[in-house]
Every structure is written in structure tokens, then in C-alpha cells.
Length: 111
Image (tube, rainbow, N blue to C red; front, side):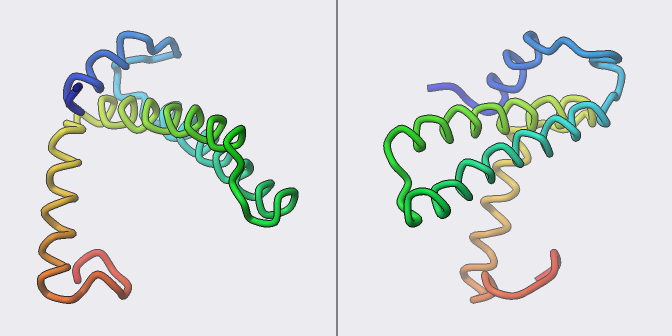
């Protein structure tokens, strides 16, 4: 099993883009937006073409897109000097607190 910290470090060794490792968050963010869009498109087509059912073929394609989303999240985190492991842990702690306080629903970051 791999940790987010390990994934972030290993993923970044495969990064090839202008300004890599120099705070080039723009490239990483645009890539993340693009891959998120590709994932959304595959789900949209499940609605349009398959009556909202995600076929095994489409599920496999979405899995690959989600891998690309994760890669760009790792790259963006690296470019912003953020630790993906800490991000994941802090997010789970935030959600657990909201669950205890019955504040999972609603709007705003500071619930």
C-alpha cells in the first residue's frame, strides 16, 4: 500500500512541463481542470447514452481519468509546497468534526 506522501513524490518524478518544481501551479491547475472535465464528460455520456448506468467499460475509463486527476492534485500540491498526506489527513479530520457536529450539510468552508 502506498501513502499519499509516497504517491506525491513518485508522481512528480514523471512530471514534464515548463517550470516544473518552480511554483508553476498554473500548469498543474489547468491540467487538473482538464482531467476533471474529462471525468465529467464520461459520466455525462453515461447519462446520455446508457440511461445513467455506468457500464464496466465506462467505469474502467473513469478509473483512468481519476488517476490523472490524482496525479494533477499531487503536482499542484507539490508546486504549492503542500503535503498531500497532510491535506488528506486534515480533510478527514475536518469532515469527522463536521459529522460529530451534524454540519456535513450546508454551505461554506468554516461550518
